Image (cartoon, rainbow, N blue to C red):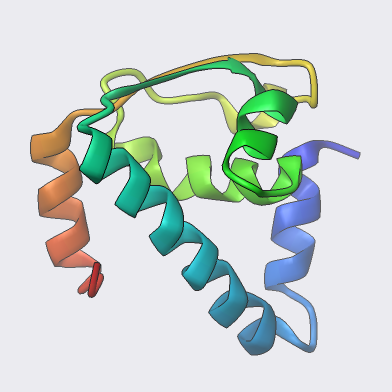
Amino acid sequence: MKIIDVWNEKLESAQVQDFYNQYLEEEMGVYKRLLADKKDKIVGKLSEVAQNFDMESWVFAGFIDGINTSLKKAVDLEKLTEDSDIDLKIDFDKLYYNMLKAKATW
């Protein structure tokens, strides 16, 4: 099973609202760190980057799914594995616009 499929299954589960509420708290923490540090690049193995943000790899894959349209180069989510090298270059202008569009409170 692909790592992004685990994320998608959770979003389709019966307890999706509880899961998603918990995820939003974790997502907010990632954005707070990125914005506070003005870090526009995240690189490393997916499993290591996820661990750095206190997330499971499949949850961080979901984060990438959400931020993908704010990256300078989109990630092919179907190819992600625990050992994938990721190189996320964030376009903060796009991110700001997308956060406003999503009505993100953070």
